[in-house]
Length: 281
Image 1 (cartoon, helix red, strand yellow):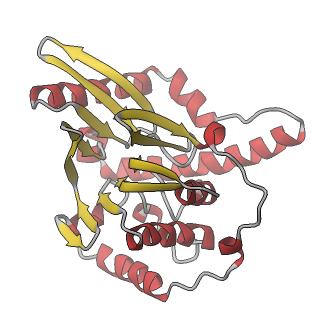
Image 2 (cartoon, helix red, strand yellow):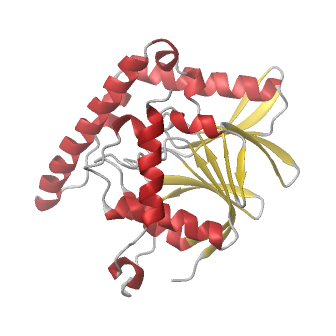
Image 3 (tube, rainbow, N blue to C red):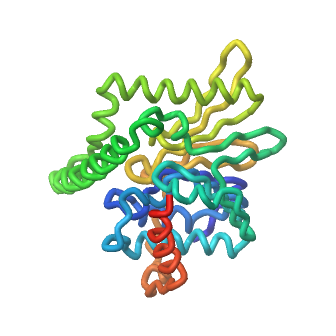
């Protein structure tokens, strides 16, 4: 399959290590692109719910794919989120084409982009982390239930149903939280003279212009790889929102790499190290 050339791709909220993660679809997406820059904007690995008993090959293949992009010359920025917050101790770390940090200021064709995960605006994260973790477990359980419901729905010839989206769209507090999140991010970005503000965290993909009395800014949110399966792409001076469920061109040719046994002892050692250091915080 011919790869699409991109200047920049942004993904977030993958939640590797959870049952709701759509790692197989993400791996297909990463295999279909050839970006100069890839930004992993937080919650890539869900360390809150990380378990040695559940990290299937499809999840490891995403890690392998990212390292292959690195080896092929893609500049990768890993920006930390709340679910992979323990990686923040490695902030401002540069390893060849890989940079680990908490936020990123990037010049894109002469315009300034401010990129960060977004949990800094989450009051629940600041004051009730245990409540946020409990909510994450509940969300993952809801996704598992939703998968079973969609299996039955497909058997009956119906389309997919998103329970969490229905809940989010029906709860006024959730709608207000998203609105406040976007307003806060854009107000600060305008105040600091940025042209773009790029976030994740709220699992709501978006590209929208926000304006106040001090100016305007383009707000972009990469969504997630649990329900929306979306990514931000920048090429030839234009931003677009990729949706894997509608934009991916399926190929009938056999995937030779998928049929090969994945052997990544160095990655297994990395995850053992992650678990070991989690208790140091």
